[in-house]
Amino acid sequence: MSKAQRHMSEWVELNMHAPTLELPPLAVSMGAEHAAICQVVESRLSNHSGKEWVLRTSQYGHGQATHPHWRVKLEVNGWIARTAEALLCPSGGCLASRLRLSSSEIILVLDAPSFGTTRALAARCGRGLLSSPQVVCPQADLGQYLQMIGNGEVSVGVRAQRLDHWLCANRTRGLQVVCAFLDFETRALGRRDQALCPMADVMRFFRYGYPSPSGCVLCVTVGLWSGELSTLELSMAFDCLPN
Image (cartoon, rainbow, N blue to C red; front, top):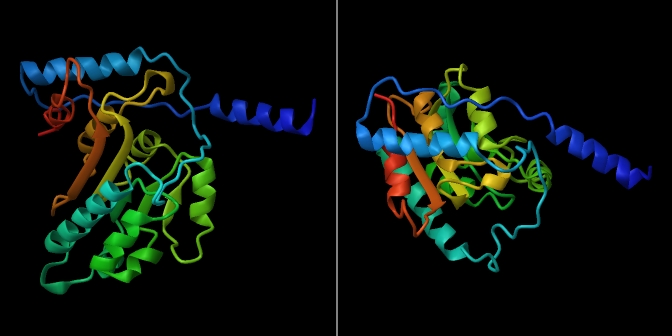
């Protein structure tokens, strides 16, 4: 077996051992519409067609002007930063200083090697965020993960994990998310061939109690089908919140 084949074999073996994922039940009933969408999500989780992977690599032009959603991402990042500043930094306070005083509070961002969202938040809410381990970035793309941890200017809490794995693994740590940007680059119901379901991750985020009781800025970007669920995909996911 060649060296390349041996590395590929090791890579395949790694991806065969994905952590166990859970979708906790709701504490209260939300009515017939809620039950219907929960059934759709649960069906998607149990009937996916692909092997759940742990890590992957890709060549995706995040943060580049050639990216098809580059301008939209700039607008979204600006909105998140302005909203976080208004709600989390009253009277000109510094969010980075607030995080240092509360070890349980974190910012949860699906960011890229360009750190577009993190930089936008730091520009509005304190440059200290660029070196805060309480800015947590789950990153399952191994190539992008290596770029992010090698960044000489931004040093935050990058984790080599899928978001769903991160949400399940940290559910008992008492973490309180004050700002989250879940930038899903797939449809709301995800992809069967990759065992991914963003709507389930939104549900996990709330059902595990991640939003800070003192207030949380949450932004979700996701694709919507033009078929049966249409634009109700995401709004119905938010109907599946806990009490």
